[in-house]
Image (cartoon, rainbow, N blue to C red; front, top):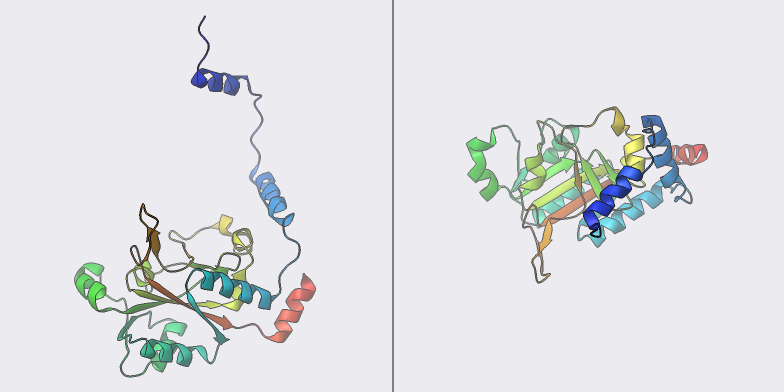
Length: 240
């Protein structure tokens, strides 16, 4: 008799394995939560989350500013002008988009995504220097922006222009992916298109030569807005 091959041995082990009942969703959630909680020593403070987010983004070659809710439009407008940006794609109907548009100097034009891409594809790819989005939240451990595109700020805004400028609020930062999914209750309903961005677009060839901008923006700017006051921080840390 011939010796069974690897395929037959594998199938034999599968057939001989004991059948266990499927776990309920609640049981899976409990096990996943337990896995991550066992590896966390303590909950980071709000300042620690901001610092971790900034350092992780900078390690991925993003440029990062930390500022407050009043100062960020002027700070960003000045940086855009200094970088030579002439046309900035944003959502003028959003609160943040309107605030930035109002702060821009005359040489920087704010434009909205108000046409089908077929109607202005060449203009979009050839003349738009930067796109501005507001992140839904962020993951501090990896420096990841969580962006939920919508009609006013579709995925194109953060994908096509060579510079992507993102705003993320400190109050929306999570320690890790598991905390983000649990805090935002992703299991109760996910957007059809949830984008995670951890730095500018980069790729490498077979010789491991790193190149930026091959599949998206070659530069990423992130403004972390400090929107948590001292009393909120004290209350949050006391609750933990």
